[in-house]
Image (cartoon, rainbow, N blue to C red):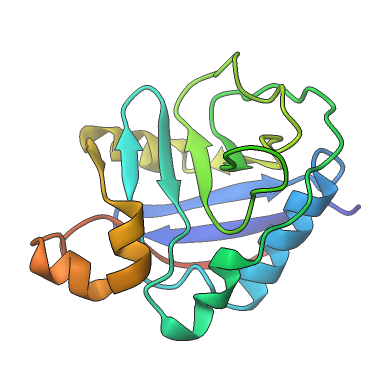
Length: 171
């Protein structure tokens, strides 16, 4: 369980996340698989709620959509606190994590108590870039985004929405 760092290149600048597989081994492994497969290329940040989270993980690339339905098992529930700048998979119940992730804009005491919401990383550099996303406030229709991808963004005049350009391993 070796820690590593990844750089997020976004429309608002870059930030670095340190991933600690000991916190959420299954989640950290899935994240690494997604990074290696270049899943996070031209990825819309589809949900931004100031003082809560920024959420992403729905690919516009047809060749990456198989990941959406490929869920992973929960990690052991070790009550890792969801602190400010934590990176975590979003789940809707037991064994539902697949590609949707969020970064917390503040400590979220009520999260991290279920095995599908265990953080596995934290923004350690570029926190001011992450904070800048809070100037936006939107929630896209996740079903439409999954089904229609770029067509949904184009038809609803959402092409200028913030995106993750790519994520790469740096250490």
